[in-house]
Image (tube, rainbow, N blue to C red; front, side):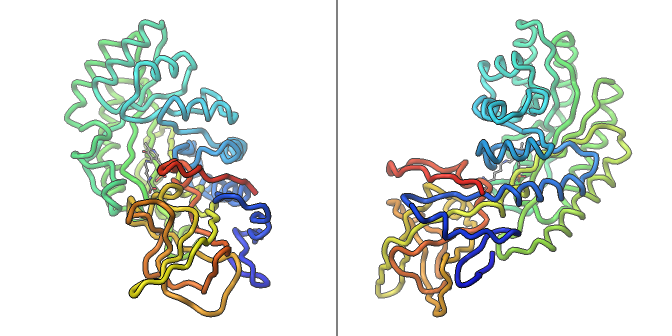
Amino acid sequence: MEYINNELHFGPDKKNLMSLCANYIRPIYVYDLDFIRSRFNQMASALDGVRLYFAVKANPNPQVLQCLKMAGAGADVVSLGEIKRALESGFLPEDIVYSGVGKTRHEITEALKLGIFQINVESLPELERIGEIAKALGKKACVALRLNPDVSIQTHPYIATGLRDNKFGMELSLLPDLSSCLKRHGDSLELVGVSLHLGSQMLEFSGYQEALIKLKNEFIKLKKEFPTLKRFDFGGGLGVVYEKLDLELESRLLNEYAGITKGILGDLNCELQSEPGRWLVAHAGVLLTQVQYIKKTSVKTFVIVDSGMNHLIRPSLYEAEHRILPLQEGQNKITCDVVGPICESSDFFLKDYQMAVVREGDFLAVLDSGAYGYSMASTYNLQELPLEVCI
Ligand code: LLP
């Protein structure tokens, strides 16, 4: 992000954002596909030998998916909707790993008919269900067990998933029951993997390291019982820095994460899989919004814009801070709350934020919104969804 001749330019290739607002009608998510490709290549080379499945939930835009497919990614999906989107965007069934705690009978049936590569199972009843459905279809389902290591990571509690009181994964004490279920359904279930996902926006790796060591031991024990076991899926979750763009720091964190992963899992001699979402796309997206009103009260200056929690819910839901920059550089600063049009006091982007003075009609860029932005948008208050543009 950089101002050139007073106009904000986006991404490593410094693309001008102002030109996108020429026929502005409503907020626009802008994604830089070159940036996404370079992030993918960087992660793929740090995690050399690991198959990367992009977590579609982070950004299901068809062009983004096509770009990642072309770069060599697979897709990690959590619903039939995401399976369909991935297939429409060029992924093949054998590129798709299907996760998620609430798979319905219909979803499992469709996934098996399509020949989805791997189903990551989240509970004993789900394993039973997959076994029954596969048997009725005369198929053999390739399953991975998502294990919950009961380990915490430093992140917002709403996006931590690896603790015993989270709904995700299965406790290690359940392994004997899982094993007998797998044997009972031996003709319709094939155990191919163990999977782990501790949570999202992880920037410190001690919990991750502990979890890998725990699950590595379980993998070794399970493999003796099930020789078909051949994959370890170590999840997604690598975080990004939102406070400022610091790609060097992120490279160091990526290398640390890759080093820990390879150091622990390297000698398992199995296929390694990962499901990154945020790291690949967060910085490659901005949300463009227009200032509607400057509203001053005795205590605050509100910059009221035409986008809000309906388009980017992360500030309201996780107290996430996305920096905001006006597209036109200004000299003087104001301290303001940047808020949206939605009828909720939680509808804000930033509070007490120092920003260049803006006026009605000016455009703002909400930064780092390429992950979990549009994919979590809603039509609350019957506001329209934002547009999406790939550059
Ligand atoms: N795999 C599984 C099974 C997941 O549940 C997730 C994310 C990922 C992979 C990708 O994680 P990532 O690499 O993106 O951290 N809406 C929240 C994030 C929720 C993440 C949910 N699961 C946010 O905006 O911060």
